[in-house]
Image (tube, rainbow, N blue to C red; front, side, top):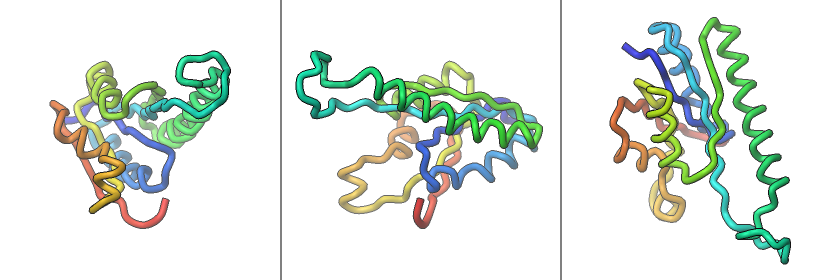
Length: 149
């Protein structure tokens, strides 16, 4: 049923709550898993470095390197379970990047955890899960993660 599963992660324990579900599905269907982390850059308040928006290239590269190392650690854990896995680090708006990578990877399923915010925090921070849910054209597995992380 599923040949390719996209798993967006943000480095939090809450986002990782989806992983046991992904292991089960990947093993059941012999699916390939692609781990994705999206880096959404926002202008920083740095005084006069002569760069648009004040974004330091070194900081961007460091963030990408850390994201890739994080995803590779998960890839290695899945590979140990005989699950084919790969990693992608993208830069841009989170929801749009998830959808773009799902299309590029021809993912049958996007599997992710919702942070479960409600009320004002939901309105203020927005919801990646909600954004993907309303715009994606493929299967979406969402779990609501609870607790800290």
